[in-house]
Length: 316
Image (cartoon, rainbow, N blue to C red; front, side):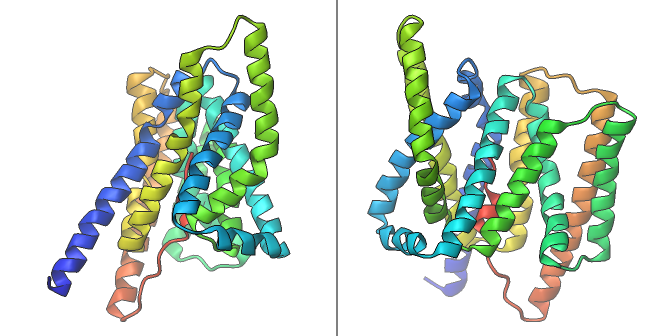
């Protein structure tokens, strides 16, 4: 097989994996709608517990326990992952709560905002420099959110909470670079004691109120698959695709959520929402075009594009 054919095959496989991952994240609200009758904290607890089950099996198969043991001996790395664990648990809980309260549109808004917020935080916290187009993109997106707050009289607390918690999560994982599998395994193991307690409380509560619902428990157990499958397919995509392609694919998930919210679940999409989303979409278009030009310029100069930090692209 020629080298060119090999690269082409790898690119096609990477694109397929990427579409599976981001498509999955775009459609995952359908699953969480099915368990919307369960308290969000109990859903989060079961998600953690069953994710640990699947992640432990996968970690064992890939022989990654040495990596996890090394993290447990690195105090600085462990503290950083404790911080990322707090951020991802807040993000997951807000996401589950938004869906249970028929606010999926806010989740979509959060993940459209996130790339721009991540860049803004990188400037403030990591002292990175922005290109002019990136500044314009952030200003336009911020204007859309301000319009919603000031003139629309709506404060999108859920969207802002999800976007900021996920951006902070990404930044923490940026300074503590670990693979998606190892990182998520450590994070869920840190959450496991509390998750087991909450899951047990929910089980006792269910038993006291008339017995266990087998369908509900089957759905809750499936949350482990819901969490790990897109993670693994994203990791496979990240190894095969350039940064620019991953950057564009990340908009598939919030687009899917937006379409579900408006057309499947019938959430109201007001004039204020339309103006806010339009500003954010315009900002993202400018940001994406600028990033693509920058990527091509580096390629023309003979620089190799590095793979994206996997943690920064893990939604729900």
